[in-house]
Image 1 (spheres, helix red, strand yellow):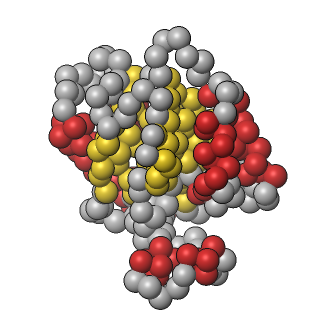
Image 2 (image 1 turned 180 degrees about the vertical axis):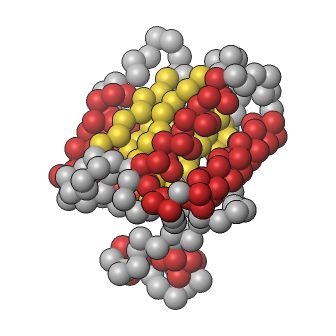
Image 3 (image 1 turned 120 degrees about the vertical axis):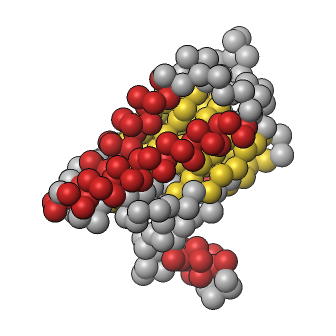
Amino acid sequence: MKAFFKTDQGRVRQNNEDNGGVFQNKDGHFLAIVADGMGGHLAGDIASEMTVRHLKDLWEQAEGLQTADQAEEWLKTHINQVNKLLFEHSKNNPECEGMGTTIEAIIATDRFTSVAHVGDSRSYILNESGFQQLTEDHTLVNELVRSGQISKEDAEHHPRKNVILRALGTEQEIKIDFKTIMFEEGDFLLLCSDGLSNKVKEQEMIQILQNEEILEEKAETLIKIANDNGGEDNITLIIVAFDDENERG
């Protein structure tokens, strides 16, 4: 298994409030995180950075997670811890009032991958069944689509497209979505902030994941497309490839 993380400020924002990374634990299993911070002056940076640092430190000491239930429980326990940390930090530091972050976190092993999701960052899988979004955006616009009040086409240009209904750090308790999938040889996982998913069409994602480039080049190509299409937001992604040792990636 191989993974590559990349983040880019984009072409408009003054700073990068996204964070993330790929980390291995004592058993060699991967934790991949994308966190898209939000809040007042630099508070988004703080929220996403605290989230990634806390989970990284805990993951590097973790071991013995053999089942999907154990992986989901690890994610649930520690993401809830992070939520409380962020909530308390924003209460105790007025300059951070209202700060929060999305989180896309996966634990990837040779047998399964467990996904934890809060906000409007996304996880996708490309496998023999095709290309599938694994997560539902926690946004006002997505709720309007789900309830049939607007179409998917309307959602693309809706004036309240950026209203997020769920984020870490904004409330004392948080509801986390979980999903566990089989992750097999030849499959790709793509985690990304909305700075990518808002600017790169799914068909382009598929073509780039399937091409012969190494993971780093795939990531750079995806970010270039997002920037070429405006780059109004920070852009962050992780590509995870399940391959054998002889494949490029």
